[in-house]
Image: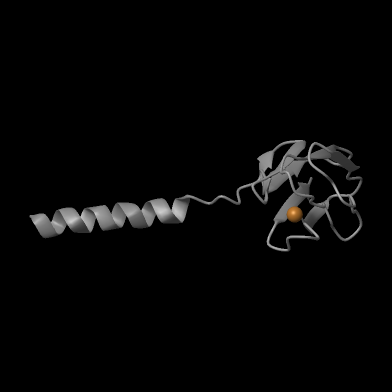
Length: 106
Ligand SMILES: [Cu+2]
């Protein structure tokens, strides 16, 4: 009996681990940079939409992709970029390469 309970808990933890995907794109035109992360880190927009990034951290960040670059954004500064072509655009912060984000343009 005890063993089966432990087994059930392990199964539930396993399922929870598989379904909690923090990279699921959400529909948003606003991305914040806080605690050294883009939030949300993956967004879905329509062709022609402009995304606005805002740096909430007290250290500088950048929004750097293949064909767009915010330059240095200090705390409170924003950067806006419109996406005219459908595609998947990955970007990162120049100062913190671990900071990554994705814009999916449909
Ligand atoms: Cu950064």
